[in-house]
Image (cartoon, rainbow, N blue to C red; front, side, top):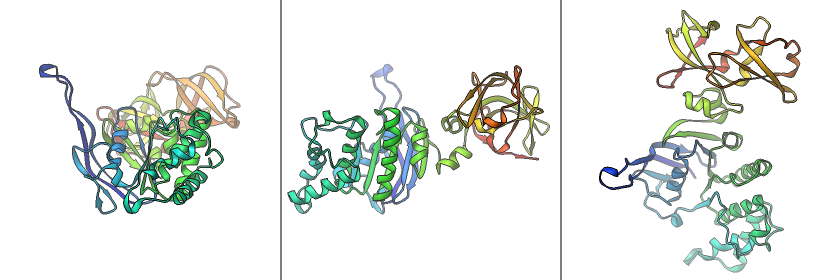
Length: 369
C-alpha cells in the first residue's frame, strides 16, 4: 500500500482570549511525501517536531487543516480510522488489563460487522497466526500484568496485525522498554515488517532506532521536513546543520571556522584545502570517525584522555574553536601507540567534514584538492 501525503498541514489554534490569546501552532507544515509500498519509514525528530501528529493524521485520529492523504489512489482524508484499514500501536501499549492475551488480540475482530464479521473459529485462527508472528503464542492465557514490557508490546503489535491492516503505524513503540529490550524488540519489528510486507510508519525520537530498521527516514523539526532519504545517505550527506547534529552517536563535533584564500581554518590552523568556496565564516562539522591520528597532522588539539572501546578508542580532546565541550575522535586502537604529552594531532577525512552557513545552517558543498 503506497501512502501519499499531499501538502499536509495541521494547525492547532492558540489558547486564551483577547490579548492573552497565543499564536496558532503549526504542528505539521506543508508535508509532501510518498511512502513506497511495503517499506518501513521512520519519522524522526525531537519532541514537538510534528512526527506523532503526522502519524495521527495518517491514522485518522486527527483531521488535517489542509492537504490530502492517499492510500494508493484512494483519497482517505475524509474517512474515519475504522474505514482506513490501519493498525495502530501506541507508546503505552493500551492493553485491557482484565482480558488475557488472546482476548486482547481478538478484541478488534469482535467489532467487525456485516460481511466482515468472522466466526469464532476464524477469529481463533487469526489470533493464533498473529501471536505466532510475534512469538507470544505460548502466552495466550496470561493477563497483561503477568507479562514483561517487551511481551506487552508484542501483544499490542499482534492486536494491530490481526486485522490484516493495509498500513501499520507505530507511535514511539519502544520508549517504555529498557535498553536491551529496545534492541531486541526493534529487531522483531523489522523482522515482522519484512515478513508481512505491510507498509509501516514508525515514529521515534531515537536516531539509532530509526537508522537501524528503516528503509527511509524523514527528519523533522518544528513541523517542517528537513530531509528525506535512506538512513546512511542522510548520515553521510546531511542537508543542514540540524540534521547533522541530530544524527550520529557520538554526535558530530562542531567548530567555528572560516574559509580564507582556499583553505579551511580552525583557529589559526589550515586543516583542509578547498575549491570554489568564497571566503566566509562557517560552522564546521566533523564526524567522530573523520579523524586520522598523525604526528604531523594539520589539526592540533589539547588531549584530555583516551577512552578504550574495545577495537576502537575514543580520543577526548578540546580546542578553542570547538562548539562542543569536548571533541570525540574515534580511531583504531592499533593507531594509538604514540599518544603522549598534552596535545594530539590529526589529519581530517574530507568526506567526513561538513561546512554550514553560519546564518542559515544550510550545507555548503565543497571539493578538495
